[in-house]
Amino acid sequence: METKITLGIFDDHPFFIKGLKDFLEQYDFITIIFAVNTRLDLENELNKKLPDILILDVLAPDVTGLELYLSTRKNHKALKIISYTSLRSEILIDSLLGIGVKGYV
Image (cartoon, rainbow, N blue to C red; front, side, top):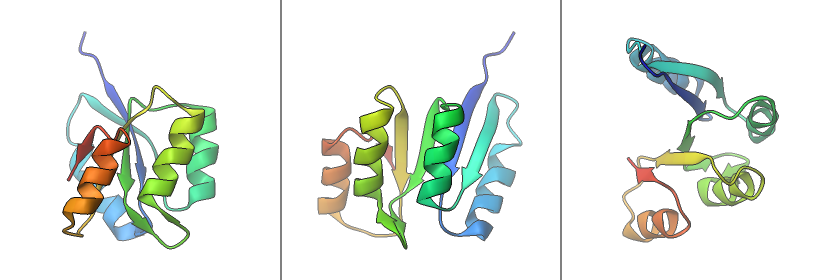
């Protein structure tokens, strides 16, 4: 039996979420358990069930990825997070990796 990886997605752009979900759902070993676009929705979903990996947008209108990562890790220490953004900033990448983000795209 193949092990499935569960994913949660946070992004403030619904079209991006749809595209990412459509792309990832073609793989049998991935199950997306939630895809949300607000901080409150993310916190609610994480309190219901933790995914193996959270794919986290670095920029959102109500919170930065750094703030969101730190608050999420405070309550869910075992959660693995991969961050992504269209920004090109070595300082941002170093900051994310320095606080424990497992990957950056």
